[in-house]
Length: 74
Image (cartoon, rainbow, N blue to C red):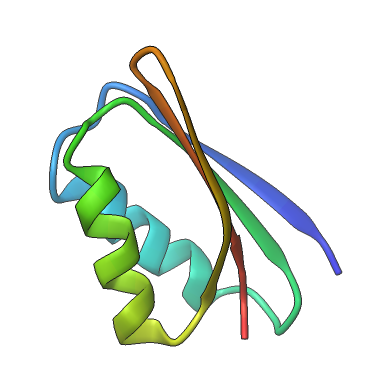
């Protein structure tokens, strides 16, 4: 298992979801992807993306304008 962090701060919809999809496609099962985002729409976009890919959202946190998503590849 490996963990990869993507700094997506400052990117606007749909770029965070597109970059997350690309990163997930290159990962193996049980790898973890951590996304750091500032676009408030990612709170909707990332869960929608995961419904499409079947990957699992382990945790999401919000602190001020930073949203962090922890995703496990299936």
